[in-house]
Amino acid sequence: MQTRFSDEQLADPKVAEAESILRKCVHCGFCTATCPTYVTLGNELDSPRGRIYLIKDMLENGRPADEEVVTHIDRCLSCLSCVTTCPSGVDYMHLVDHARAHIEETYKRPFMNRFTRAVLAAVLPYPARFRAALSLARLGRPFAGLFGRVSALKPFEAMLKLAPARLPPASSVSKPATHAASAEKRGRVALLTGCAQSVLDPAINEATVRLLTRLGIEVVVPEGEGCCGSLVHHMGREEQALFEARRNVDVWCREIDAGGLDAIIITASGCGTTIKDYGHMLARDPAYAEKAERVSALAKDITEYLTTLDLAEQQRKDMTVAYHSACSMQHGQQIKAGPKLLLEAAGFSVREPAEGHLCCGSAGTYNIMQPEISAKLKSRKVKNIEAVKPDIIATGNIGCITQIASGTAVPILHTVELLDWAYGGEKPEKLKALKRSA
Image 1 (tube, rainbow, N blue to C red):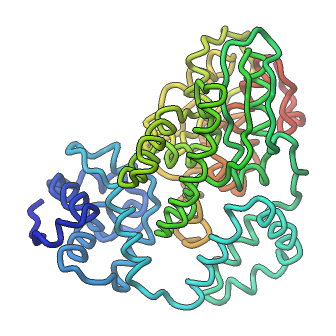
Image 2: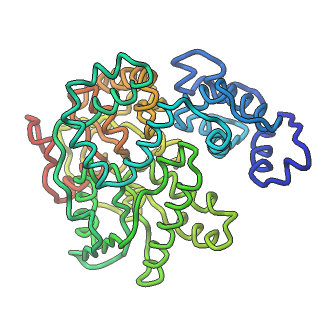
Image 3: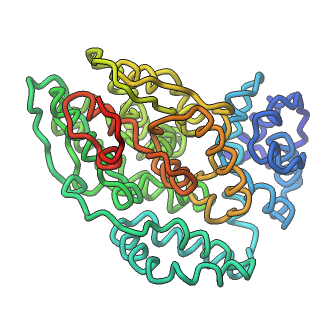
């Protein structure tokens, strides 16, 4: 793609990076076939290629974002399916990140949109606040339909509908601690307990600690870690995201220096994609660039780490698992075969639903801020999953778990919960009602 940025514009390293990304696009249109919003809406401006044109025009002319640009960038899920598809290697992830930060700096959103985004940024990354909000949401859920009658309040309707009817109790695993290996020690890792996941489904981290310690891995939950920054990063709140990244980098580097780490384990693939990008996010910060690279190099999805431990094959189970590969797993981190191979080695029969490359519509806060598009993607995803007639659904991201569970009665669990069970742990609570078992 030809660009016409001035030398003055290119003196800004962020603009220079955007320009180098834009130049790689050859207008081939391969991305349109795998973009969930284009497939759903059929609008060229809701495809990666269309958004690239909008971003180019906005940045090249040095103008603030307008309503058209914001509308189509906001509809982007950041699923990164286009990155997997693109034959030219266009780094769409960092381009759209730059566009979102530019929108945040130059565009004044309508009041209710600003308010909703501010509420999400102030609540979701903080487990105590999120737990309190979900407790209140149970009281407001009967009135969700009233919010749905007003367009600007539909995100609050979506929030209320997504809120669980029953909230699991807080887990001690989320507290800073060192969990000793129960077998001969062969490794030491730090665990990101997360923000939303630790509230919505603490059983995921509990299963992770149980499995790893049985395998001889010491698990550390360091003092001071917090949200990875992903949620606000995708809102264009760059400074808040960088603050959270720096805090975690400090925490993990302290742990690396104190006792060494073989890996930083992440059980939510959305968080993993962001943490693996810390090196890029902080590359221009002389105080953090090197430390952030160290952290990004150590970041591993739980399944990615488990594939290095040579787990023994288990007896076959009479259970069919539909594996849903989260976008942040298959496109963001390019982890594709590992989770399926682990499940098969654990004794499960694994099936992949059709259109596995398409997003389920969760995408961080997307199912709140874009509920209509999200609902269409969820219906499509659930239909494809149910078509393989699974006993269980497995995935590696809490957002996908919450989204898909709201559309099907098939139990959905994190992959690590099934692996913990297969390798000596208790049967997950969600599966105890199933008639067939191993």
